[in-house]
Image (cartoon, rainbow, N blue to C red):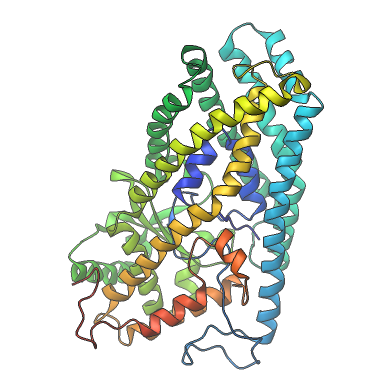
Length: 462
C-alpha cells in the first residue's frame, strides 16, 4: 500500500524534500505509500485514493451509465479499509518523524553525532560526510517498521506484487539517494551560513533551484530506471503509438514517438497509472503496462490524453515555478524559525548556533512540520492542474474516440476499481491529502462536459 500524498510526484514535494529534508521527506512519503513513479511527475491517479459519494453498492457489476462511481460490496469494503489505513499511517508517520527528531535533540543524539564527526576530522566537508548520512539514515531507520507494515498491507490487499528482496533493495536505493541529496544541501548550507548569516536563506534558494532542475532533468535517464524498467512504447505497442500520434495531430501539438515510454509496473504493482515527467530533452509520457493490460484501448487512449494535457499545458514547469515561490517563502520562515528554536532550546539540545552540524537536525524538524502544514496548499494547486488535464483529455479525444465522454468516465471507474479508491473520504482528507479532484467528481464531469453541443468553444483543443 505505497501511495505518496505529496509525495511524493508533485514538484513542490521534490523541492521541499530535497532541500534540507531529503531523508525525512522520504520517510514521510514512504509511510504514506510511495508509488513506483517519480515524485515530481504529473499523474492521472490520485496519490491519496480518489473518492465517491454514494453508499455501499450492491453486487451488480460496476458501471458508469448512472453517472456515479460504483463498486461491488466486497470491493467497497476493501477500498474503505485500505484507504482508512493509508490515511492513518500518513498522519502517524508525520507524528513519528517529528517525535523522533525531538527525541534525538532532547537526548543529545544529534549533538553526539556532531561530536563524533568533529573528532574524526577538522574539515567541514569531511564532517558532513559523516554527520549528514548518519542522521538521515538513523531517522529513516526509526520509520522503517511503519514502512514495512505499509508494504504488508499492500500485499494483503493485492495492490503490490513486489517481493521482499526487491522491496528491501528499493529501500536501500532510496536511502542512498536521499542521503546524497541531503548531503549536497548541507554542504551548500555550510558554505553559505558563515558568509551571510542573515541572508543564507535567500542564497540557498538561488542554489536550490538549479539543483532541483538538474534532478528533474536527469531523473528519467538515471534515477527512474533504478526502480523500474522502461522501454520505448513503439517497440511494445505500435498501435497505441499510432493512436496517440493521431490524437496529437488532432490537437496540433505532435509529440515524437521517442518521447513515449512503457513502464513495467506489473513487476511490482497491480495498480494502473500513467504520468508525464522530465524537462526539455528528457520530457516524456510514461504509461504503465498494467494500464494497458486492465483498460480497453479507448480507455487507455483517454488516459494518455490526460497525460498529454500535462505535457502540452506545461504543468511540470508551472508546478516548478509554484514550488519555487513556496520555497522562497519557506526558506525565510525556516531562517526565522531556526533562530527562534535555537534561542529557546539550543542550550538544552547542545546546539550552539545555526552553523553547528547538530542544527541540521533542527532544520529537518522544522521542514518536516512545514511540509505537513503546506500540504493543503500544494495539493490544492495540483488539483487545479489535474482538472485542467481532465478537460484537455476530454477535448483531445472528442471526435477521435466514439462516445468519448462515456469512455473517459469508464476509465475513472477502472482506475477506482483496480486501485481501491476510497468511496467516502471526508472533506478534510480531500482538502489535506488529495492531489487530484475526487474520483466521483471527475467521473460526473466527464459525463457532463460538452461544450460542442452548446455551441461553446473548447478551452484547449479548438
